[in-house]
Length: 133
Figure 1 (cartoon, helix red, strand yellow):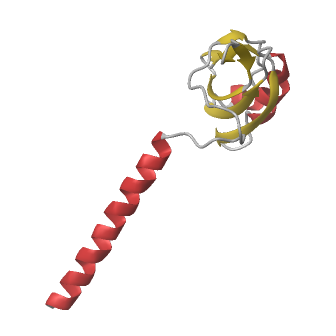
Figure 2 (figure 1 turned 90 degrees about the vertical axis):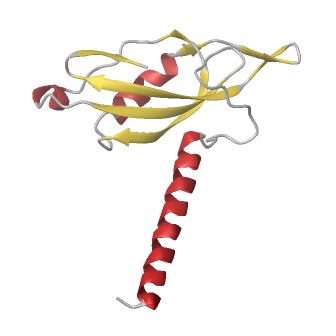
């Protein structure tokens, strides 16, 4: 192998390592789903309604996870929400979306007033145990 080929391979590998490192750094910090509201990591869930486990998933003993971005109102109720990640895709999404309006979160305050905020919750589905955030 010539020196020119070795240099090209080295540059390609360096670029790949830098790209992978940058992607890992971005994955560590959640991207906001709602503009103009503060992000609160790990906001406490005050009330979680029962979430149905899909019969198809139970039949095949399939598990998975769904991550939801939630815009929590000043009263602790979800104002808006959206699924931002799911594995396997779409299998559990509709069950979370159906239950999300009934959730209640801890309220947050800013400058002495209750305020809206964004939080992300990951739900893990397992055929062997109940669904929990």
